[in-house]
Amino acid sequence: MVKKIALFNHKGGVSKTTTTFNLGWMLAEKGKKVVMVDADPQCNLTGMVLGYSGPDEFEQFYLNEPERNLRSGLSPAFESKPELIKPVECVPVSRREGLFILPGHIRLSEYEVTLGIAQELSSSIQTLRNIPGSISLLIEETSKNHNADYVLIDMNPSLSSINQNLLMTSDFFLVPTSPDYFSVMAINSLATFIPKWQDWAVNAHNSQVLREANYPFPKPNLKFLGTIIQNYRLRYGAPTIGFQKWINQINETVSTRFVPVLNEKNIMLPINVYKGQNIDDDYCLAKISDFNTLIATSQENNTPVFALSDEQLGYGGSVLDAIRKKTDEFNRVFSEIADKIIGLTENENSI
Ligand SMILES: Nc1ncnc2c1ncn2[C@@H]1O[C@H](COP(=O)(O)OP(=O)(O)O)[C@@H](O)[C@H]1O
Ligand SMILES: [Mg+2]
Image (cartoon, rainbow, N blue to C red; front, side):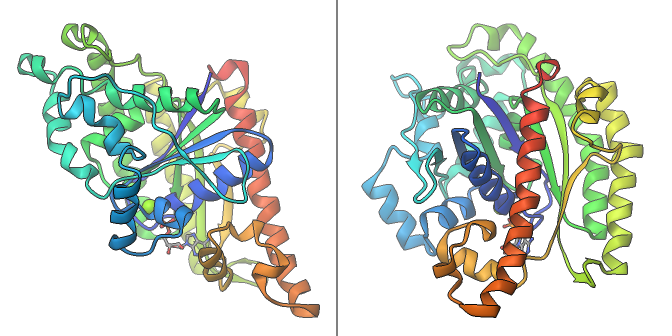
């Protein structure tokens, strides 16, 4: 069975997209088949992977490949077309065998309002009943078609209906976060929202109307994997004092506020599954410092920092050696995250 992992934080700029790409690449490097889903209408992931920088390039892609994106895949349900949802043919990521992207669409947000109404679960939704279950069905059918082991869903930075749907129909979720005051606030608000969404998903699954739909709403079975704290500055190999303070605050908020709430709603794996991966009670899977100047090279080459070749790095001699030390370190960090995720999600207790 494919494992769907949502990367969710309604705060923007916390490395959701960067982590989706890097983690997807690393899981594929470890022999897993991975489909990344770009569910953000800003389409940063699609742009990063396919090397598009402006709207013209996207428009050209949609013209050339009209069916190869999330919006088009969903259109039979959202536009009441007389056809069934069918899998999207994902785009293979160049230079990384086993990694695919289901491209996003810059007009995906046009479906937001309809989905919002459909998800109100009132009796008026008869005509919209095929919508709430269609998103997970499309993702599942698409991943089956590619024989995927993992689906990574890069979400948009909001508490929108689309996010509510994507999160509550995923098997697992990761919370990428950055060490600052706003990220602590964001985790506090997730502690309020996620339980409400969980209650909604149980109701949606049990609702008579959605049970009778072409695409019934699946039974929720979401589990928390952990946080990834990213993009802080280093001094003498450790986070600066200012960043360390926020890292501590995030870890404390997760362990004292977020996790207890998730436990109440059965959104946590059994404790021994985390312990088996050496995860502490702050549920922080990794801390990743600022990539510094490497981020530009990574973006220019549509390649994660840790996978850049000597040629892509463009230096020789001792400069290259120094840079290699850095990229090797990021390689180790992402390899460890991927191993933990494999351990957490492939444990029989985790299903
Ligand atoms: N570890 C990092 N070091 C340096 N820059 C980073 C790092 N992680 C992310 N970034 C940069 O920060 C910005 C926001 O990251 P992004 O992944 O787009 O966040 P989100 O998807 O949560 O909005 C991007 O410009 C990205 O290149
Ligand atoms: Mg993003």
